[in-house]
Length: 494
Image 1 (cartoon, rainbow, N blue to C red):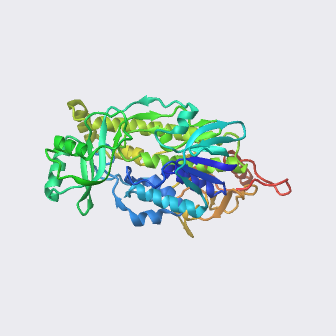
Image 2 (image 1 turned 135 degrees about the vertical axis):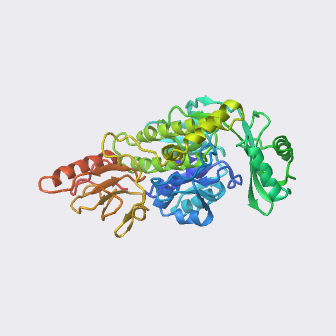
Image 3 (image 1 turned 45 degrees about the horizontal axis):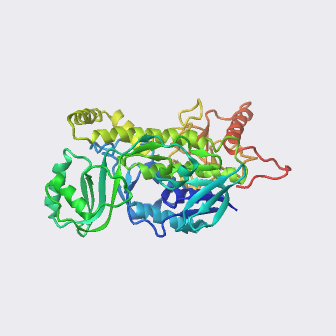
């Protein structure tokens, strides 16, 4: 029996596997497809996703293979300048195909010792209070302590568990693909620009050597979006919207997607948890889907590892749903709104024009972009300092930078006083005595996902050090379990 089985070897599943392996959790990833995906639906990483990669020492691998772009224009395609002073050290969008993201994450996962088994799918599930047993498509069975469903919007695991997936079915559909076009590039660009004055969901992006990423509204909604469209379908819709098919030929791949919007009514059923598209689907406006899944995995990984390794405080695993389901619900709401703003009818276009005017106010522009980039997220940890519950950006320290200290996936106490202690939790939390000109608090406790779990607002002094240490101890116990004391029967492994 293994510690954790992950159903689905896409970016969400592989990211989760990497996080678990940082804590020496035994992981098997079961991926239905025998080969890596060739279809690149997602094309970019937002600030928060780049941050979590940076926090694990992976960002440079992605930056070398991607292109940085300003974040302006990512809400419903309304072109405005990028907001100033976003709460991140990565204030840009990294254009990088999903296939490359998956490849880089998979290479890292294999380096960490993840057992990736392709061509195998979960087709049956049974569980009790201590374990989960899955039936596999090859007829075998495999047992584990926990199962994570990262197997996409049509999740077999979610359906086997009977978890509800309420929402709206697709009303619209688009054809997507990488296709060679023979039209003159200048003429093509001019025609696309003209069509996009009314149809913001139409586009043709040059990939080089006559190859383009083409997206065009489909002629209705199909019953089976898993079946790719034919080239003739793409050419027909190009002619319908642009008056020409641009000489489309030799597609690398073709796909289709719709605007179905659904959210699982729970993220956990016993020892099975949902993440990524298995838990939520929505229109791709703003490029949020892959990012939302990666961030699900980053939130879940250390909590599930704590449960497996035996140091999780009571209820820690349940905070995964408490924190991430509202984030997904907000993404569904903003993509619903963006989808309406792409309609060509007079009403939606009037609202679009009004919102375009409102986004000239810097506060409005920043608010909407913070939604898309996830930089505005603050988990509810209760009353306290404004930093509490937020991710702390990669603040510079006197002896380096913050994220360079968090590659191992542990908690971290950043303490400029030098008098605080993580005694009893040193197997789970690193104690760093350093200062930052960008951090006003004398001390902060960070969870492994970078969110601020405690802020020491007062400086220790006569009669205060003991009280502050007790406050810190309560926060460490809340998020990292009971402290271990020398002379006890053993400490939980991390």
